[in-house]
Length: 118
Image (tube, rainbow, N blue to C red; front, side, top):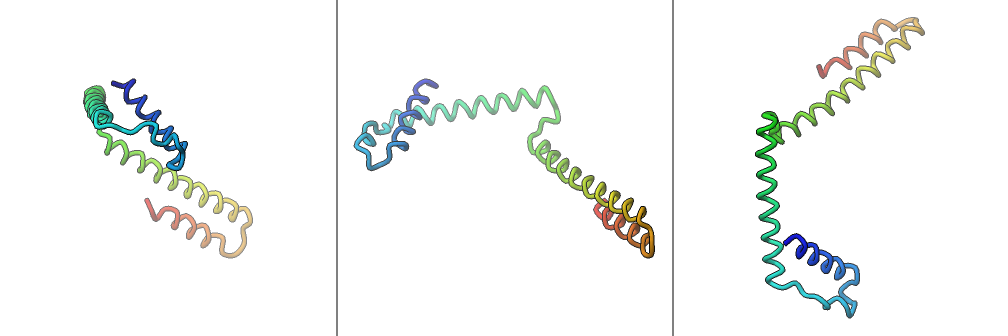
């Protein structure tokens, strides 16, 4: 079945490449059998995908994909937060090296802003 699906896809890509105005465009028309073959192949892939997800969840109990996606998003937020903290610390250290009036206020405000999200 996979070979037939690949053949159908090649023919459809050929039609797309030559364009509707080409005399070769109508060289091949998708038949009902081709459509059924594609639908069966999609169903087979969905079944395999479901089975693989089941196996994955058996191997790794936390393999709940929405949870993993959520954790990945949270990881990105934490990376951004850490980057902001590092910037605030660098700014504060640079200001402390300069010294002068308002240094303590600047450092306090800058670090307080950075820690607000915590």
